Length: 500
Ligand code: B12
Ligand code: SF4
Image (cartoon, rainbow, N blue to C red; front, side, top):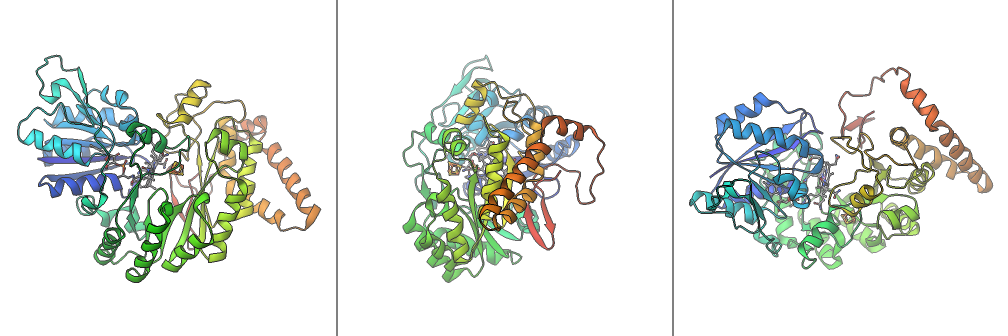
């Protein structure tokens, strides 16, 4: 079978990032003897180019992978696929997993895959090759006409249950980096890094993240799985060998030190065999001096933490993140002490948030002073608890955004979209401002904080902002046309930052 993977990536223009899920699916199918093709659709959908791809490659199956923000682009592509080829279409990924009804309703989509896709997609390809009815493959929702079942109705849907999660991740082949051309990716070309994943799953249940929803779908058992240290380090060795441009590695795992013993073995082996720095994600609750020292000893150069909100109430009651402010401060301090740079993931425009609470996030960053701040505007992903809350409260508008750097899709009393945009734009500057104030002694510190508070709250007053937004602005030379997660090179540093 010839399977064409279509990765819709509207937020990148020239070089798209590597995608662990798609690379894993390709590797699995290739190992099973199937031929895979890859189409990376960046920026605006270029119909001609897509039709050309279909006509040249003549795939038997077109496989779309979608996150929520890319989903609106699927329908036109599915229709084009049906018009210009005989391929069966299947759609998978986190949005298909959590919103299968919406995805299967798309005209031109024959099959939806929920959850991990390696085995179901392989079974589908085998079924097609052998001319068998594939309507009863676990994890797949199949439109009856497409699956070869006896019904003539065409639109009736087989909703098959989920199979268990893959227990042994070592049984999967290493990620494909050929059909999915790693050499042309944003990761290698721009960041000069190797991208990896050693585990699947996360023990936490933050309300805005997909993990709690997927965990619930699978019933929670065996949700967290790790590859063996040997397997992941071998893959890193191979990638470093094959792509000499790699200057450091990044582990995309939700939280790499989830299992302390595994992490201890990992750092020992990594230090011994890989002589390159690496970046990883950690939860403030999992960080202590020992973890920081272990990470440092193996060459960890950047530790990324979800700080998300600097306001205790929002963090606990809105985000379901049960971590105290002290713990967050301590986590950053452990890394500072070990000589590891830090990154904070921050969200603003959260449900029920006020400007004062956004200032708490800015201030906490001012206290912990991460090297990099990754600031996004809250987006309610369907299927999550946060989405349900926003829906219930009537906050969700029908605004479409391609990335969560652009704008707020919520309409709520506490803070407006204009205010969120304005605060996001100046987030880093304000962090620096507060941070300077915190260096002052005693009562001056408190006074400086209060003066900055008043200044920001006045400047982001709704009336002032509206008037400002209506005034024609001169574009700064540095501002780029594209919206999206642009990595700006400034003073020789790579900084994760969106554009105006
Ligand atoms: C690493 C990561 C990134 C990396 C790399 C991208 C990647 N996917 O590899 C980077 C930093 C680039 C990134 C960017 C973004 N990310 Co991200 N990312 C993740 C993260 C932490 C891990 C993804 C991963 O590798 N999972 C492991 C693999 C094995 O799972 P998988 O990708 O889901 O794929 C499996 C199944 O879904 C299925 N499957 C997937 N596609 C298909 C297709 C077919 C045909 C089939 C049959 C099956 C199938 O099979 C795969 C193998 O089992 C997840 C959180 C998470 N834990 O999943 C967030 C996550 C996927 N990201 C998210 C978001 C929002 C984004 C951005 C849109 C943010 C933005 N800029 O606005 C961008 C999108 C950029 C883009 N190019 O697509 C959200 C998506 C939520 C949603 N409902 O859409 C997630 C779920 C985090 C969250 N908030 O909960 N991300
Ligand atoms: S800790 Fe991170 S990955 Fe885990 S549930 Fe929370 S947001 Fe998701």
